[in-house]
Image 1 (cartoon, one colour):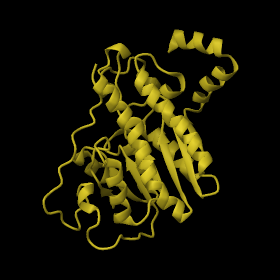
Image 2 (cartoon, rainbow, N blue to C red):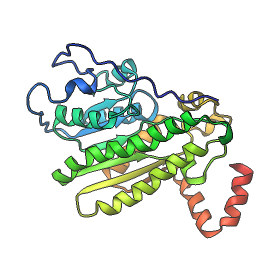
Image 3 (cartoon, rainbow, N blue to C red):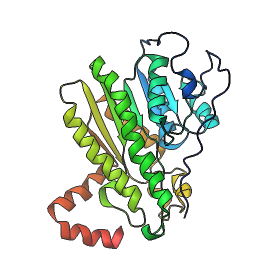
Length: 285
């Protein structure tokens, strides 16, 4: 039983160069004069060092967006950014002040954020009673708290501009509640409620909220959480498939995206026939 590591906090270089796109976030705040203002649309993608985040960044780059990429692994971020004009801002969002510093640095670098794709997250698997308290805190800190704090830091600029979209990455675990993934399920369910509440608050501002619920995706997430995926790999989604769904949801200003679309069924069954829902969950969940 292991945790998908959240990594250690970044170590800023002593003398960052103004043109170096891989400078940690603290070195970019309030330096090099006033913030730049880009004409191109800007997407800030967290969790962009691998998996869904990396695939989403590449999909936006295909359409000419300026990218700001965040993750803990500088080398992998640079691989994601290869061939693009992306700005790489490595940082651990679970560290104190991480979301605020990232938002400040991103806005200082580009002058705008049109889309925030909050894809950073980690998992843990095993009986809840065996889960260390520190790991409970780490999962909730990154998967829920850090995401909320980052959205809180980015939203004012979007509202002031009268446009923008926040994309929150959920999980089927947050819809059905998976055994031995109780805390991860709780964090993703919390994001679902947050997305709905925030969407109502933002009505009339020009800023939208998209909640994306993917099924099981073929990434290293399952190995890092402490248990490999034990189903058939033919049923796994590719990160590119989820990235395409995120892209289409943003392009069409959609509130929700389920990948695949049949994932809407568990919620409907739960509302219409809760007894049947629990029997199915006990058998298959």
